[in-house]
Each structure stands twice: as structure tokens, then as C-alpha cells.
Length: 75
Image (tube, rainbow, N blue to C red):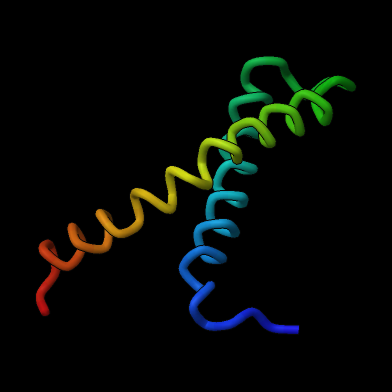
């Protein structure tokens, strides 16, 4: 089953924010707590809370970023 094309920007923001917050929260959690037995749970908790912030921010910031990139590149 595929989503309609009109959902593409939202799906893009959802996937990108999920992957970026997963990576950044993993690095930050590892640096803060180390790679011990508690790491996976701490990382999951940090990731979910950061994704909850990252997704709506990505939806708001993406159009602004596209405009900035358009101004900074030859067209």
C-alpha cells in the first residue's frame, strides 16, 4: 500500500527526523552514559523524546530551508 503523493513532504520529514534524532541521541547518550548495559534503554528513551520534538520542527523548518537553499544556489 502506498500513500498519496500529497503526503510525501510529511513522510520525508517523519523519516528524516526519525533517523537524524536516532543518530544524534545515540551519540549523545553514549558520550553521557557510556556503552554499558543501561545504554539501549537510555538511548531509546532519549530518541523517542527527541523525535517528538524533531518531527514538528522538521515540518516547520523544511520550507524555510528550501527557500534559503534556493537563494544560495544558482537557478
